[in-house]
Structures are given as structure tokens and as C-alpha cells.
Image (cartoon, rainbow, N blue to C red):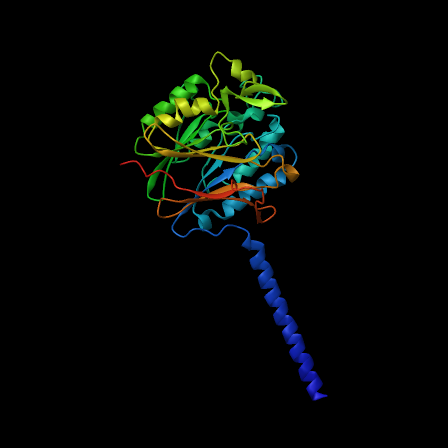
Length: 349
């Protein structure tokens, strides 16, 4: 009888221990899918098109920004980049969702916003450049951040085109956040901003730049569609006919990105799901261009965001797409959701 009691006690202890081990393993597995932080490095978090979350899945939007806010120190997140299409129909209730989500970042980490085509016009039909972005995220709010550089000089009360200055990884950085299909004078202003900061590595964030076939939107190129050919640009949008001009991906490459030796990265959204392209600027600098947009995936995108993890050597960036709602890495086929790039050497300072 004594032997049986001892055996039962040992069995119960083993069960308790195995249970604790199982709980521990479960906790580890629940966190295992998140990319490991890179010691000594820093991270830029990219929010792909959130239009479906603003319209139908507000909790997902907040899960994204809450995860970023909770992990600022763990990943040394220096900035959050939103690629546009913040909303689906440019309606006040959707902008309220965006404001609530981004409020979780306030005081934790700065962010750059810009309008996509769905953020323009009446109910997201971009027949004009009217947007509620500046009403929801006014310039006065951005000016409270020490990293905020300024806005398009012809529209000082509008936040649709902005630049940001920060330091990370032993390098000075400049973020240019430009509207959907930037107007000609906005491109002029962007060039001026880059010229004024030759000692900073430049990152362009804009909405529509790369196509899913890893090429830039290009009005002068043609793509075959059902035995016909059509423009490979963005000519189907009303703004493309504007006398103020309308610059697609190739336009921005030719007029802006390729012209400066200190351009390092371009990040965009608009098209599903992922794409990437490396090109050499006029000075021989390699510019890594990438597109990420999960809006056509389940549940409006399943909360996937992109992490650009900069290594401390300054010569490598690990790119991973991770969903805090699913707690898993992306499984999209191909190599464009998980890869490494080497940013151009930092400009002489």
C-alpha cells in the first residue's frame, strides 16, 4: 500500500511537471514565430495597406500597432512607415479607427503616413485629391516630434507629403513620405529636401511604385492583357490627367530616386502581395525597392506587417513579414516576403 501511494505521488508529480513543461513549451512556441531581435541593430516597422481594417476589422489594426508599441524596445523600432490606403473609403468613421490605432504609438515611436488612392475623393473614388488625412493627422501633431522635418512647402497646413529625420545604426536617415502619384511640384520639393540633406541615407515611402511583377509602374511601357496591350502605369486614375502632373513608379525613379547618391530604400504598397527590385542610381548606389500589401488575403490581410531589421554592421537588412494576430510569419510562396538586402554605404558626413 505504501508503495502504491509513493507511485501515485510520483505519477502526479510527473504529470504536474510535464504540464508545466508543456505550458512553458506552449508559451515559447506562441512567441517562436516572431522574428528574433538582432542585438545591436534597429528595426523599421512597415504597415501595409490597412484599408480593410479601417472599414471592417478595426481590432486587427489596433493589434498591429499595439504589437509595435509593446515591442519598441525589444526590436529597437526607430520608425513606423505606413504605405498608404489607410482607409477604404476616406470616411470619417474609418479615419477614427486609424486615429485610435495610431494613438497606441504616440509617445512610443514616431510614424510616417501618406495617402493612397483609397484615401482620396468621395468614398475612396480618387477623382480628386481631397482627403481627410490632414484632418485626422494634422501637421500640428507631427510637429511635436523631434524627428519631424516638415511638409510640402506649398501646403504648410497639409500632412500628405512630409519628411522625417532620425538617427539609428550609426547613420543619419531621411524619410520622404509622398502622396499617391505625386504631383510634379511635390517631386520638385522632394528633390530639394534630399539636396538639403546630402549626409543622410534616404528612404522613400509612397503608395504605388512597384507592380506585382517586380517592375515599376511605367506609363511608357505596355503589358499584355487578354491578347491586348495597355499601359503599365497608373493611367486608369483620374489624377493621371491632372495638369499638376502625376508621377508613377518609373517617373519617380527617373526624376527623384536615381538622381541622388544617398538613396537607399523605397517602400510601397497598393498591389498584392509582395515584390522587390534592386536598381543602380546614377552614382552607382544600389537602391532596394520593395512592395508589400496583404489586403487581398483572408480577413482583410490577417494583420501582416513588415519588419526591416538592420544589422549593427550597417551592411545587411533582414526583411520579414509577421502577423501579430496569427503570431506567424508569412507563407506566401517565393522569396519576396523573407530576404536580405545590403544598403548602400552611408554618405560621408
